Amino acid sequence: MIIYKQGKDCFEPQKSAYSTPETTTKLSASETKILQYLIDNSGEIISRDKLLEIGWPDKVVVPNSLNVAIANLRKAFKTKNEIIITIKGAGFTIAKNTFIQQQIQPEVIVEDESVTEEVSSLTSNTAKDETPVSTLDNNDDVVVDSTPLSHFAKIGYGACIIAVLAWIGLWTSSWQSPPCVSVNNQQICGNIELLNLNELPKDMPTKGTVYIDSTGKLHEKN
Image (tube, rainbow, N blue to C red; front, top):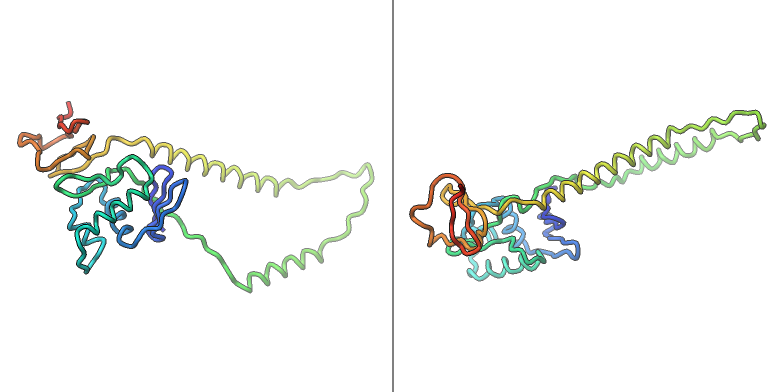
């Protein structure tokens, strides 16, 4: 099963749910499809027509349906940061590396009567094989088998290591480079929510990276 992590948030397409540390929001089928498509195409500007096609395949809906879906998704994010960025005159985008895709194994529950019977039989046989323990003299040596303890200790250490690695992964994912999008094979980074495709300068370089500052002006990387 595929999930998408964004800091401490989690998007689960199979469950049509977006979870934050505070709450879990149930998404509609259209909202789930739109969000997953934007994530899978992070860094690309997706037109309104394309998102209408993705969210409502083989259906004719009013354009405002997309506005409502985007608004509901932004409410689910519970953050002031704009995850779904509006590009004026072009559509919407999600910056690269905003979400991290993870593959998890579904929890398997085995319900087999034969397994239960086998465990019961094994427990019964173990009980029959037990013999009374006689009182030891003061001079008798007591040997304690520490193998089970060592086994559980190894499991505990392994679980701790996995938890630490998972925490490090989430911590490092929060340190992201400036959001970027691709426009005509040109990489534009920075305050991309201020980007207006209709006002791009004609002399904009075709190679390298261009940065957009907090006033909306473009600057070529030195």
